[in-house]
Length: 304
Image (cartoon, rainbow, N blue to C red; front, side):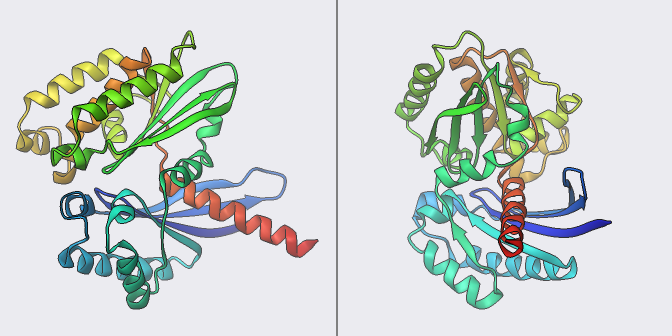
């Protein structure tokens, strides 16, 4: 007997808002199978508002209302059993973030939870990331967003230390990251990785997924430092429009791709990693896994 349920995750980031609908197939005696059924991405760049004006503009608030209304209808049409909407850096720092979340709940019925960097890292850790982290290897996990970047060091199969920095692609584009922030990130990475002989980087976020797709590599194969350095030089030499047309990037990807690549490349350099693995996971995947685990835990409580 096969049990089939759909779960949804809404990821409200600084660069874009995403809806992921995933189908979970359950068969007795086997591990559950998670399949991405639908992914909708809306380029509402909240970070451009918040990092400059410290609040979400009326224009982007109305766009959010429209997006959440559409997401609600899509979830209803898909017969989603559970959903969670999480907002990160931009809404967290917006002076009107809580008020916006309240208004959206009233108008659309979508309840937005504003989470911090620690919560974000914990949600992502509940994904298939744990399957990639082998006990006899050391990894620096780097999750690049529009407003912040989360770094976690994994050794012996466990998280050793984690830190969130306000080093995000939208911030960099708006010239809001001082050189001292780069120095702070460099010092933290070096301090927390220098004791390990060999370390690899795991990258997550839309930008590294885009780079990986361009590379043509098979899933599971890493990108080398040499490839990343060459890619960085290539995109820096191209104009914004060339990156859109020649490399077929979305307009809201073609500008943030440069600062994002710099962050990944810098992290690799500072921890002396030769490779970066790209498992194509993110906050939305973690939300779906968390929802499924919570639902199963409740079912066990009822059975007891």
